[in-house]
Length: 445
Image (cartoon, rainbow, N blue to C red; front, side, top):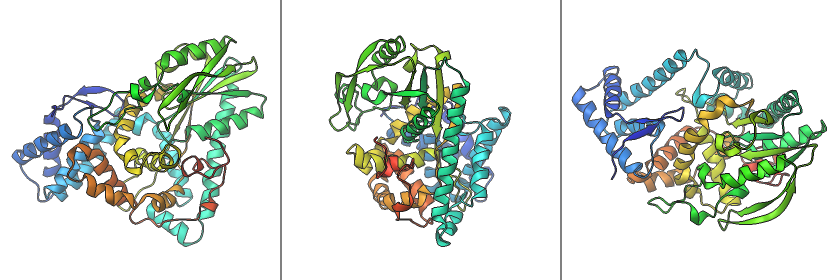
């Protein structure tokens, strides 16, 4: 078992691990709660947390979120429920302090605070900012109206993004649609193509997923799990070579990757970029600087997609964006990539680690942000997934090497438990972004 040496901060920085900071945070939470305890118990708990983190993340670097989740879990399991609640409040106050130091212009994952506020305001105006609100919408028969409102908002944002592209002028030859896993990049890419084609802009897709190395070339962890979330899982040199040649007007032969076999075939599709065309790249790591290093910045337009959800429960805790995307991906992977629900859940720690290291630090360079979170998704997601989380909790409760899967499953299950389910998928339009994950849409993915 390797000791914890470093952690990944929310802005993607890797910094030294300091158990003393965990001890102090626990002690402050204890001092602020009834039935608290002394510094000696805080030290004991911080050592327990360190052991759990070391066992859970022996082959990778834990994030700040991972660490704090394990602190909360350790407090609850050791009979310190009041201190755990005080610790949650402490975390929220620390977030407020960070935002104040930044001039209150940033929020979670480097997204501008003003944008988050606009999302929350829209949700409140439509009564879908809480679990209770969604339940009321379903009970009163207004679910179809919510679906239409969400789709209209998303379509308006896509149109605004297309307008911004046109404002950038004729120099733009590469549009990058970037964002974390299951944020809806592919559908947004298609929507962009539909919108810009009406303005005489012909777009040619550049499918980065076809540039994955063969899966057998990726390193395995102790569970035999492949880390294909890192940019280095892609043939970055070949991507840049093809981008450079295409923008120079030359013809290239692009590869094809088969997700079911984990194999790629080189030189399959002959591709050329005409003078009136713009390359359109849908890429998890599109903001990662090396991904498009062969293209001058003036020739790029960077569009960022994220599930900027603002859905809270009765305890005023918000659904984490990464948990929302996890549920989307659990469904999509089960029918499009042949992965089991539990496989996606236990693999998710790679996803979050990669986001923090290779996506979040570059958000400040984007030209436009689109919110892909649809509040109407959650009743459907619960209907399709809720039964898997109790199973995951039982499987991984005592398996400290799977603590990320256990804590995530427990958190999502508790959050969704009071939410009413919704089964009628006919209410979801066939051109909806949500169809990218549940299937049955008109777009080819």
